[in-house]
Amino acid sequence: MIGNKVKVIIDRPLGTYHPKHKDIFYTVNYGYVEGVIAPDGEEQDAYILGVDKPLKEFEGVILAIIHRINDIEDKWIVVPEGIVFTREEIIKQVEFQEKFFNFEIVM
Image (cartoon, rainbow, N blue to C red; front, side, top):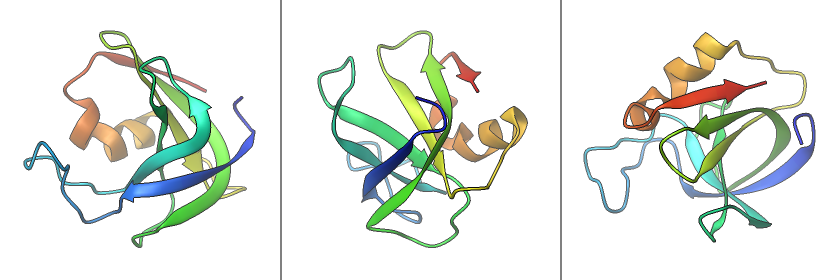
C-alpha cells in the first residue's frame, strides 16, 4: 500500500472549512480515493501534502498512513512522487484535524 500511486478526488480543498464542523479549517487538500472502501463504509480518506494550492483531484504516492487508535478510520498521506516528509512534518500539517484523535503514523 505505501508507495502505491493513487488518484484522490478532493472534496475539501485547501482553504475551506469542514462542512459540519465550521471550526475546522483545511490547511491542506483533503479528499478520498474513489472505489477504495474504508472500515467506516465510505471511500478511503486522504490528505494531500506537498501541494500549496487548492485542487479538484490529485495523483500521487501514498507516503504514510495515519492509524487512528480511537476511531475506525485510517487516513492516507498522499504526496507528489519524489517528495518525502518526516513523521513530525506530517503531524504538523494534519494537526488541525487529527488533534481530536489518538493516532500513530505508519511509514
